[in-house]
Image 1 (cartoon, rainbow, N blue to C red):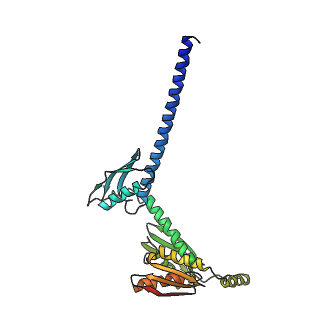
Image 2 (image 1 turned 90 degrees about the vertical axis):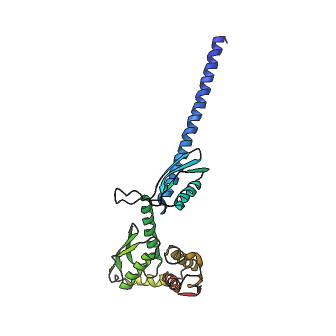
Image 3 (image 1 turned 180 degrees about the horizontal axis):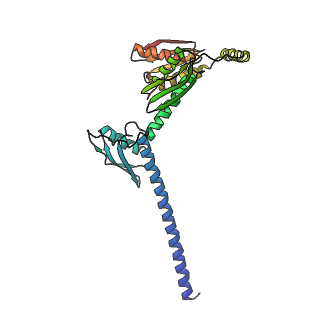
Length: 278
């Protein structure tokens, strides 16, 4: 191979090598950009979901594992919370927290009455929780009730068999975490007559014992969703449909409410709350 040919081959090899390296660098850069964009989105979304930060103006940018936070909040604790959330995201090693704290800070007013993403999630969670509690209750599980939530205000629509069932549905909704008010639009209507076959099926269903584990789980879940009962301090056990509560409550009113909530769960025959002390 002559000298000219060798030079051409060498030049081609160098060009191909440079192109390969350049392509790898570009691919790596694009991959890093995607990761950083995902990290920024995860941090910002968590801020939007947080009831303590969603109203604040916080900007997030990520570069090589460092999250830079800027904006304004009302208290030091909010600034610290924003930093801890950012540090909790995978791949974030350090946080440059440039957030300003102003005691008289007022978040910018909304331009419309549209709910924020966090508020939509909160409302959907409340709706699902209220529906679950109504379904678990022996007094409301068969009712035709539609639940809608907007900005923490729950609206109940549909029918109830009697005034007591209507009132109970409203109390159960109001006693749910995050609920600000309840608009009870339930209409009291006599239940539809059942056929003979339906009566037989109903008797058959009620004769079947509901599993104790199911009852225990639903009682605990009801406490967890309640705004007036500290579920972490109450132990629940069930034996043949008989529920025993033990632990600590803050007052006699909380003990009475815990007893009532447990008694409302389907399959519960009795509730013993003597071991609940305050």
